[in-house]
Amino acid sequence: MPVTPEPRPETIIAFDFGLRRIGVAVGQQVTKSASAIGVVANGTSGPDWRSIGQIIAEWKPARLVVGLPTQPDGTPARLTARVMRFMDELHRYGRPVESMDENFSSWEAGRLLAEQRATGRRGRVRKEDIDSTAAVLIAERWLGRDGMANAKENQSNLV
Image 1 (cartoon, rainbow, N blue to C red):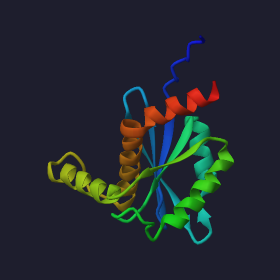
Image 2: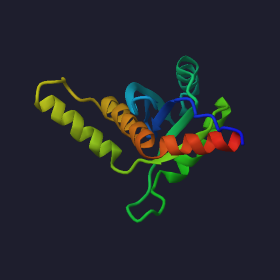
Image 3: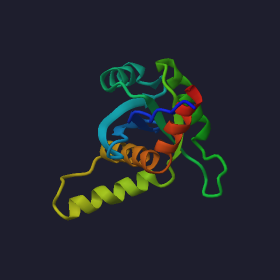
């Protein structure tokens, strides 16, 4: 019986989609941690695909994870359809695209950053900081809860 190889630890890029900005973070499975990269613009002409492409070229992630907003009862939120279109368009980069529950990630990010400011560990909190920190939280949720299970399942489907 053939031995199924252990999946290699992956680097992921996570996105927190917003109508003006998209928060971006990079995460990796070895430590199940993530770091903020920053934000890319999003507006009436759509996301800044050039910047997203540069991030993907630089970090070479194995997959892309997008925070998917839903109502507390699980029904679609106001932005869900736009986020799904964004996810569809991310397939242009030839990587698997997955979603992760992003409920309260921006609120939690704002709270964490406000606590850091209150204790003197950081200066002023900008909206861009909240967006990129929300992407960190999305990445860490994926890495901690579903990421390794999904990666192993995807790897075994390839064998």
